[in-house]
Length: 305
Image (tube, rainbow, N blue to C red; front, top):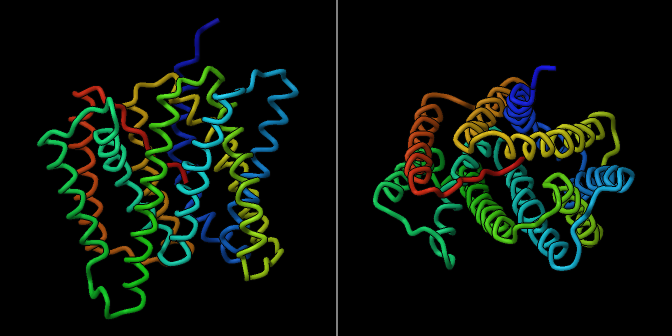
């Protein structure tokens, strides 16, 4: 029989490119019905429980001891704080704008990698690419800062996303250095379940707005669980295991385009010449960082929505 593993790998990449791009809209719709902490907890509690139960039913080997603690801690950093910051940012800024800002995540990964022991130090081309990306970001958030409430929201959303990207990047580096032997999908299941359980008491204590249990909100939640966490994360780990990083790394750009288009279609989120120019500048800066990082053999990971 012909080996179609290559076709499956690229199909998984297509799933990641499309479905993770749609989750930005899914989060925005979900926030109409659920407060942020409840949305985060419910999403990962449901998806993590399903994936862990499936793994137990198949007799899959789960991480134990130090590997379990590393999986749990990385899950809190990557999904709890990293993805959680995206949810909170989308209470302030449009989903498409958030997706554009997320494309800066390689800067955080490369920068933190250089600061940590054993990391590859930054070189002039990498720093130049990061500065270019910052120029594009400044173009996104600059008009009238401090004089208009919406623009202040853009600034606050940007700062929240920086915290999230820093946490996601540090968690990714930490997990990669632990060399956990369990399958990445199993590690992802543990990460999601731990995150859902950890955020649940925070949701009960600090979420003041009651949830609105309507069809639109429940559908958004189930979409995030199914296509954002279970399908999207599984497809990502499958593609990461079988495709070159240079190929896989195209998905954040496709994600942002999908998110911008859906945000405009469903909410008429603004996207004009300024946003288009900023997107091009950011993409160019990230491309320079990726190109030089690939030469220096530093894998650049991205942020899941």
